[in-house]
Length: 204
Image (tube, rainbow, N blue to C red; front, side, top):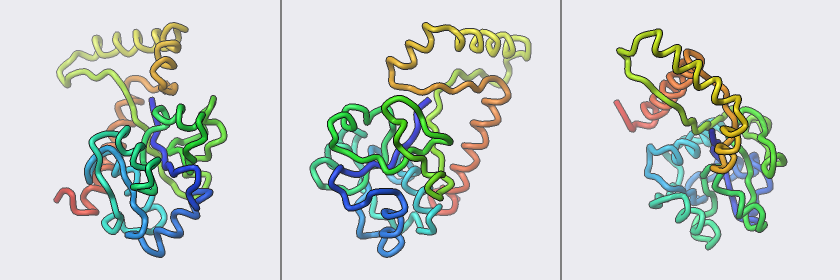
Protein backbone atom coordinates (compact mmCIF):
# COMPACT_ATOMS: atom_id res chain seq x y z
CA UNK A 1 0.00 0.00 0.00
CA UNK A 2 1.16 3.52 -0.79
CA UNK A 3 -0.50 6.93 -0.66
CA UNK A 4 -0.52 10.05 -2.77
CA UNK A 5 1.10 13.24 -1.56
CA UNK A 6 0.97 16.96 -2.36
CA UNK A 7 4.56 18.21 -2.41
CA UNK A 8 6.28 21.59 -2.75
CA UNK A 9 9.91 22.66 -2.43
CA UNK A 10 11.22 23.56 1.01
CA UNK A 11 11.31 27.27 0.14
CA UNK A 12 7.81 27.40 -1.36
CA UNK A 13 5.46 30.10 0.00
CA UNK A 14 2.80 27.56 1.05
CA UNK A 15 3.16 26.20 4.58
CA UNK A 16 0.03 24.05 4.47
CA UNK A 17 -2.58 22.74 2.05
CA UNK A 18 -5.20 25.49 2.69
CA UNK A 19 -2.68 28.16 1.68
CA UNK A 20 -2.06 26.41 -1.65
CA UNK A 21 -5.78 25.83 -2.24
CA UNK A 22 -6.54 29.49 -1.57
CA UNK A 23 -4.07 30.51 -4.28
CA UNK A 24 -5.55 27.96 -6.67
CA UNK A 25 -9.01 29.36 -6.02
CA UNK A 26 -7.79 32.86 -6.82
CA UNK A 27 -6.00 31.84 -10.02
CA UNK A 28 -5.82 28.12 -10.91
CA UNK A 29 -3.56 28.73 -13.90
CA UNK A 30 -0.91 30.60 -11.93
CA UNK A 31 0.41 27.49 -10.18
CA UNK A 32 2.31 24.90 -12.24
CA UNK A 33 1.49 21.39 -11.02
CA UNK A 34 3.48 18.50 -12.41
CA UNK A 35 3.72 14.75 -12.09
CA UNK A 36 4.63 11.57 -13.94
CA UNK A 37 1.56 11.06 -16.07
CA UNK A 38 -0.78 12.79 -18.48
CA UNK A 39 -4.22 14.25 -17.82
CA UNK A 40 -6.37 11.37 -16.60
CA UNK A 41 -3.47 9.51 -15.01
CA UNK A 42 -3.25 8.60 -11.33
CA UNK A 43 -0.96 11.53 -10.55
CA UNK A 44 -3.28 13.97 -12.33
CA UNK A 45 -6.21 12.49 -10.38
CA UNK A 46 -4.49 13.44 -7.12
CA UNK A 47 -4.33 17.08 -8.21
CA UNK A 48 -7.84 16.99 -9.67
CA UNK A 49 -9.50 15.47 -6.59
CA UNK A 50 -7.74 17.84 -4.20
CA UNK A 51 -8.59 20.93 -6.23
CA UNK A 52 -12.18 19.74 -6.64
CA UNK A 53 -12.48 19.33 -2.85
CA UNK A 54 -11.42 22.99 -2.57
CA UNK A 55 -14.03 24.13 -5.11
CA UNK A 56 -11.56 24.55 -7.98
CA UNK A 57 -12.48 23.21 -11.42
CA UNK A 58 -9.81 20.57 -12.29
CA UNK A 59 -10.06 21.59 -15.96
CA UNK A 60 -8.57 24.98 -15.10
CA UNK A 61 -5.42 23.59 -13.50
CA UNK A 62 -2.06 24.22 -15.11
CA UNK A 63 -0.79 20.66 -15.27
CA UNK A 64 2.61 19.64 -16.66
CA UNK A 65 3.13 16.03 -17.68
CA UNK A 66 6.45 14.20 -17.20
CA UNK A 67 7.70 10.74 -18.14
CA UNK A 68 7.85 9.64 -14.50
CA UNK A 69 7.85 10.72 -10.88
CA UNK A 70 11.62 11.11 -10.74
CA UNK A 71 11.61 13.58 -13.62
CA UNK A 72 8.73 15.53 -12.09
CA UNK A 73 10.44 15.68 -8.70
CA UNK A 74 13.62 16.95 -10.37
CA UNK A 75 11.53 19.64 -12.07
CA UNK A 76 10.13 20.67 -8.67
CA UNK A 77 13.60 20.92 -7.14
CA UNK A 78 14.79 22.86 -10.19
CA UNK A 79 11.97 25.39 -9.91
CA UNK A 80 10.30 24.43 -13.18
CA UNK A 81 7.05 23.47 -11.46
CA UNK A 82 5.69 24.58 -8.10
CA UNK A 83 3.71 21.55 -6.96
CA UNK A 84 4.38 17.84 -7.40
CA UNK A 85 1.69 15.20 -6.89
CA UNK A 86 3.62 12.04 -6.11
CA UNK A 87 3.66 9.09 -3.74
CA UNK A 88 4.82 9.09 -0.12
CA UNK A 89 7.14 6.13 -0.57
CA UNK A 90 9.28 7.94 -3.15
CA UNK A 91 9.90 11.00 -0.97
CA UNK A 92 11.92 9.74 1.99
CA UNK A 93 15.39 10.72 0.70
CA UNK A 94 14.23 14.23 -0.22
CA UNK A 95 12.53 14.63 3.16
CA UNK A 96 15.70 13.56 4.92
CA UNK A 97 17.65 16.14 2.91
CA UNK A 98 15.23 18.94 3.78
CA UNK A 99 14.62 19.79 0.13
CA UNK A 100 10.86 19.39 0.06
CA UNK A 101 7.76 20.05 2.15
CA UNK A 102 4.85 17.62 1.97
CA UNK A 103 1.69 19.67 2.42
CA UNK A 104 -0.59 16.65 2.66
CA UNK A 105 -0.67 12.89 2.64
CA UNK A 106 -3.70 11.57 0.78
CA UNK A 107 -4.30 8.84 3.35
CA UNK A 108 -7.19 8.17 5.71
CA UNK A 109 -4.98 8.64 8.78
CA UNK A 110 -1.42 9.81 9.32
CA UNK A 111 1.17 7.18 8.53
CA UNK A 112 4.03 6.46 10.89
CA UNK A 113 7.78 6.48 10.76
CA UNK A 114 9.45 9.37 8.92
CA UNK A 115 6.03 10.53 7.65
CA UNK A 116 4.34 10.88 11.06
CA UNK A 117 4.48 14.70 11.07
CA UNK A 118 2.79 15.01 7.66
CA UNK A 119 -0.90 15.98 7.99
CA UNK A 120 -3.54 14.34 5.87
CA UNK A 121 -5.67 16.34 3.44
CA UNK A 122 -8.73 15.32 5.46
CA UNK A 123 -7.50 16.82 8.70
CA UNK A 124 -6.90 20.09 6.83
CA UNK A 125 -10.50 20.19 5.62
CA UNK A 126 -10.29 18.44 2.23
CA UNK A 127 -12.00 15.07 1.98
CA UNK A 128 -9.49 13.46 -0.36
CA UNK A 129 -7.79 10.10 -0.21
CA UNK A 130 -5.56 8.52 -2.83
CA UNK A 131 -4.54 5.02 -1.82
CA UNK A 132 -2.29 3.19 -4.24
CA UNK A 133 -3.31 -0.35 -3.60
CA UNK A 134 -1.45 -3.49 -4.52
CA UNK A 135 -3.23 -6.80 -4.52
CA UNK A 136 -3.78 -10.26 -5.90
CA UNK A 137 -6.71 -10.69 -8.25
CA UNK A 138 -8.52 -13.73 -9.66
CA UNK A 139 -10.69 -14.31 -12.70
CA UNK A 140 -14.49 -14.18 -12.45
CA UNK A 141 -14.98 -17.93 -13.07
CA UNK A 142 -12.82 -19.17 -10.19
CA UNK A 143 -14.84 -21.29 -7.76
CA UNK A 144 -15.82 -19.84 -4.39
CA UNK A 145 -13.85 -22.58 -2.65
CA UNK A 146 -10.64 -21.74 -4.51
CA UNK A 147 -11.23 -18.04 -3.97
CA UNK A 148 -11.68 -18.47 -0.23
CA UNK A 149 -8.63 -20.73 -0.03
CA UNK A 150 -6.46 -17.98 -1.49
CA UNK A 151 -8.05 -15.36 0.78
CA UNK A 152 -7.20 -17.48 3.81
CA UNK A 153 -3.64 -18.08 2.60
CA UNK A 154 -3.00 -14.38 2.02
CA UNK A 155 -4.42 -13.52 5.44
CA UNK A 156 -1.96 -16.00 6.94
CA UNK A 157 0.98 -14.62 4.96
CA UNK A 158 0.11 -11.09 6.07
CA UNK A 159 0.69 -12.13 9.68
CA UNK A 160 4.24 -13.34 9.07
CA UNK A 161 7.17 -11.07 9.99
CA UNK A 162 8.88 -11.93 6.71
CA UNK A 163 6.00 -10.34 4.82
CA UNK A 164 6.31 -7.14 6.87
CA UNK A 165 10.04 -7.05 6.10
CA UNK A 166 9.42 -7.41 2.36
CA UNK A 167 6.78 -4.67 2.45
CA UNK A 168 8.98 -2.26 4.39
CA UNK A 169 11.97 -2.94 2.10
CA UNK A 170 9.85 -1.67 -0.78
CA UNK A 171 8.71 1.44 1.07
CA UNK A 172 5.08 0.33 1.29
CA UNK A 173 2.58 0.70 4.12
CA UNK A 174 0.34 -1.92 5.76
CA UNK A 175 -3.13 -2.59 4.40
CA UNK A 176 -5.24 -5.44 5.75
CA UNK A 177 -8.15 -5.89 3.37
CA UNK A 178 -8.99 -9.31 2.00
CA UNK A 179 -11.68 -11.07 0.00
CA UNK A 180 -15.01 -9.30 -0.35
CA UNK A 181 -13.76 -6.38 1.79
CA UNK A 182 -10.94 -5.65 -0.67
CA UNK A 183 -13.16 -6.38 -3.68
CA UNK A 184 -15.80 -3.81 -2.66
CA UNK A 185 -13.09 -1.29 -1.70
CA UNK A 186 -11.44 -1.47 -5.14
CA UNK A 187 -14.76 -1.31 -7.00
CA UNK A 188 -15.83 1.79 -5.05
CA UNK A 189 -12.52 3.48 -5.85
CA UNK A 190 -12.90 2.67 -9.55
CA UNK A 191 -16.46 4.06 -9.56
CA UNK A 192 -15.27 7.29 -7.92
CA UNK A 193 -12.49 7.70 -10.49
CA UNK A 194 -14.89 7.08 -13.37
CA UNK A 195 -17.29 9.70 -11.99
CA UNK A 196 -14.51 12.30 -11.84
CA UNK A 197 -13.24 11.39 -15.31
CA UNK A 198 -16.77 11.84 -16.67
CA UNK A 199 -17.24 15.14 -14.85
CA UNK A 200 -14.12 16.67 -16.37
CA UNK A 201 -14.85 15.32 -19.85
CA UNK A 202 -12.26 12.54 -20.08
CA UNK A 203 -14.95 9.93 -20.80
CA UNK A 204 -18.54 10.17 -21.98
